[in-house]
Length: 321
Image 1 (cartoon, rainbow, N blue to C red):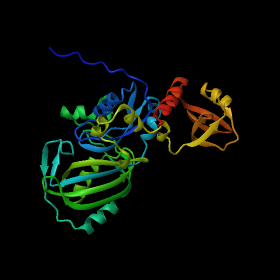
Image 2: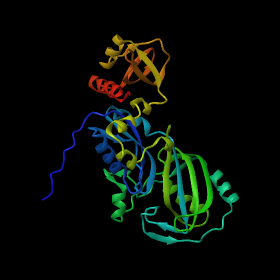
Image 3: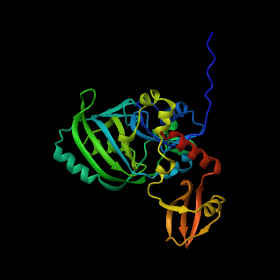
Image 4: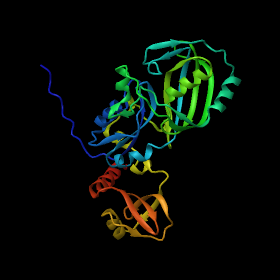
């Protein structure tokens, strides 16, 4: 007879955890695992990584979920391995091979020239195997049914692209790709475009996100590392909620103005106009939410509630040695 499962007692947890997402996990699977380890009652992430991909995945807990959308526009950096000579249904190693092509004998000078040509603003057609939705249904579901859906090209930008000749994990000819790009860039599609420009076909054998916004892989923790920690150590891995707001101008309010701001009231201010500000109260310093300043008024945008603020203060105090 199986022993009854122990019910996890959830609790309020607030902050951002930088996970080094493991291979084979969907972003949601990784999120649910960390949510369970933290016993958090509310969680979300800031954009998905394919199961094939590893690397930087910011996970948001509690009040941080209110600001996760702020991070979706962040620039990204990736490292990928592109196998030449084989195209797959998905553009990566998870798909079936559907086309073969020649293996080009490309010198480093050829790759450097191609990198320059492919750098800058451009348009990209999203792949069918993606989470984008058509009539409320993810494109990958249409693809699995053999249905091809028309996808409008989207504007993206490649800020930096470096390539070099390597071999993949099966010692097959491949190209190592290092790219810095805007949001919405599909590296699988970029890999296929690179192969096409070289006169062949290709697919990704490996993909790793090394940075998203200000969050880099050096600050990430792995699932095995989290599993080996105590609950206190896991909480200590959390970055504060405002880590999602690095480009917001800070504004400090006295206690009276802070209370009015939290009630949703606009406040007069002598500060210059600013499209994005993060608002704090004094004594003790505590995050209240985000706002913008227009025509001498501080206008609330996203607010924390008093219970969340109290939980964050308690969590910070308990994390102190």
